[in-house]
Length: 111
Image (cartoon, rainbow, N blue to C red):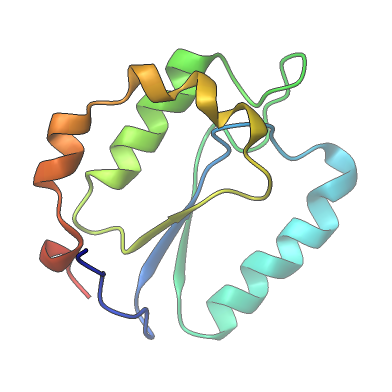
């Protein structure tokens, strides 16, 4: 197993909902999380799928998979995290480019 380098000040953290998104009632708490991460020296990149809510997910599965792939394969992103849960992330698995992900090794990430 290859582990990525630990996060440190200046690391870029992307947040995307590849399952359910953040509802309006969660906005205050989410804003506090982003503020705290920024105060600790992290750069937060917020995905477009994060705040959408289509039925019970943040966006159509194709869009969620596309955004997740974008963040996973971006060498300037040091961590990709969901806002919570992930029960419906299984819908995006068949849509991910695992060959491309395999070439984007954690040890190559810039930190």
